[in-house]
Image (cartoon, rainbow, N blue to C red; front, side, top):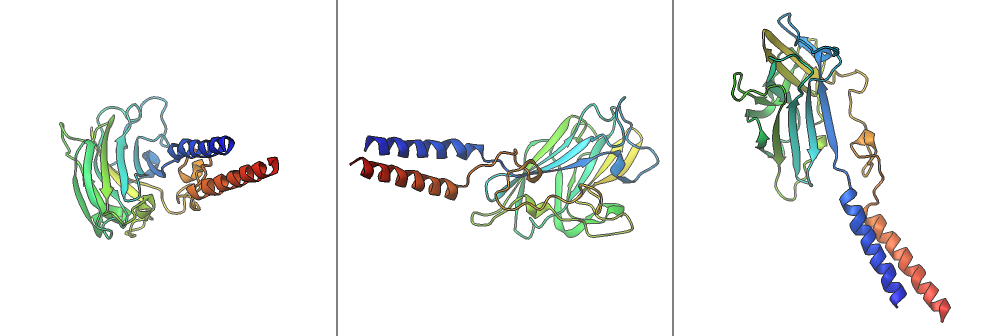
Length: 248
């Protein structure tokens, strides 16, 4: 019996060890000068060694449990020369249809508008939401600053990163975007999009449930599902009982 108890304890320890290793699903959109589609003729000036492909801003969605998604908008430092900042950030999703509540939980605050296909990103199309930041210090989303939000739905309703993976409603001839930004300051007034439809690496990967590979937002380490752990545990317990009977 002591031998069986040791096996059961080992199974429990394995489950406890594996649980915290599960990776949350994260989806990040990158913005750079290559994605600009309207401007006043002055691109955001870049620091030495940077190119139009250098990322100066990111928009990240991360699953936080089953009914919360974390949203982080960041303007990186050291890519653009000082001066330009982000004034507007447009995004898509059906979170409004799920009655999600958006809360600023850190960093720079913004005025948020949500409604289906009503936020206008100029030539990039219509979006379902827009974070509008102050366009003067203090309060602007300047370089080196972030704005952190949560989108939350009621218990029993599922909200995930996939609820934000929608392209904009087409407008003009600029194609479709998952999100867009308005950069201004220091003589710059430009709009740029993330993921033009049809570009390489535009669409997020089609990931089966439980896929923890890097391409699907995980850390590349396969983590056993709870059901798999239960089957493994039952198998080990059966082997232990069979071994004990033979020992008699």
